[in-house]
Amino acid sequence: MKYLSPFTALCTVGFFAKFSYALARSPVLPLFALYLGAGSEAIGFAVGISTVTGIFFKMPAGALSDVIGRKRTMLIGLVIFAVMPFAYLFIDNYQTLVIIRFLHGLATAIYGPVSMAVVADVAGSRKGELLSWFSSVTIIGNLLGAPLGGLILNNSPGTGGPTIGAFHTAYLVSGFAGVMALILAVGVLKGDGQRERHNSLREAFTRFLSGIKEVVSDKRVVITSNMEGLQNMTVGALEAFLPIYAVTVANLSAFQAGLLWGVQVIATILSKPIMGKTSDRLGRKPLISVGMLLCAVSFAAIPLLQDFYLLCLAALVFGLGEALVTSSSAALIIDICKEKHFGAAMGTFGTIYDVGHASGPILAGLLIAHIGYQYSFWIMAALLVIAIPIFTANVNIDKEVQG
Image (cartoon, rainbow, N blue to C red; front, top):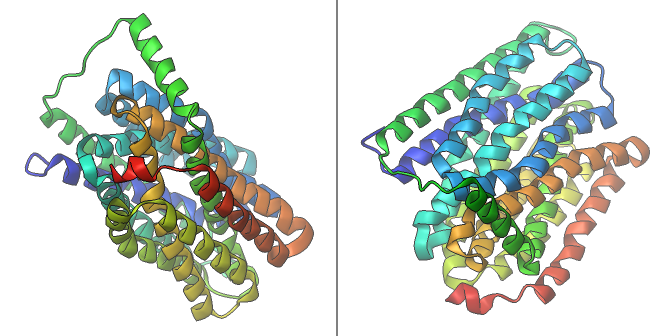
């Protein structure tokens, strides 16, 4: 890894970490919960609980990285990526699955905001572009992880659905990918001679609190974070229930269910760097608004479709909308914040992001259990549409962005 630039090395580590986490999540996780006898509400809770972890830990982790250094904080998260997938091999009931999912969520809670802060540190005026490139490169792991998980389950010899052996195989592959991310990261950290500044405990704690206070007191940061939080609410709902809908309602295979998620990720990967560069030049707000609208329309269309190719089209449009929102929202928040508080800014952003991600499958599970897929998806899509005028009226940052 010593021959790679810091940005390229960070992307490589992120790829393996994301691959590991995606393979353990969708469609493997909801189908594993179903295998353990969980109903729709319980499936939504199992998928969302790992994101609840981020709600509690992302903001402190990001602020802590501003104080003790990015490298140390990142390494903690990557250790969890490497260890936790193997814990799934010992799960034999739904309650244990929920506990393991909560602990597994520490990986992204710690690593996520810190890695984005590192990119922001070196991005300069190219924040939208480099953050988008970083995100696109690393979520290639999502592109490969989800369909591979579906393929492993689809090749299970069982006639009544995936067997426990198929689930164990998926989690073993996830664990090996997490170990690879950790090994590569140790190589990067070993070759980096940068020294972190040491503060007294009192100075460090004061800086920690001041960073959080400054970031969360700016309504522009909170509202912009909520835009991605709402968009991510629908992402979480799709992660939990698109596989279930595809298999139980549309009568698709587990592999096809994984492909649907892959189509969405492909659309995001291909369009995100372009949209990030566009936001650097033309501004963030229009892209966020259009992206929210595309996500709302495609999300609302899914329960009206059962054909595989039409569902792929809806997933593609949703992925494009997600790219428009995510390519601009994080960069917009960093535009507003001072450089010394990038970690706290990304932690705050990540916390609200995770509130959306956690609430998505939980809310969808409750709604689907009572009113079915169609009205549940329509209600959630309406929330995205309602948020657009609130965002455009209250987040006035054109001067800051153009500067």
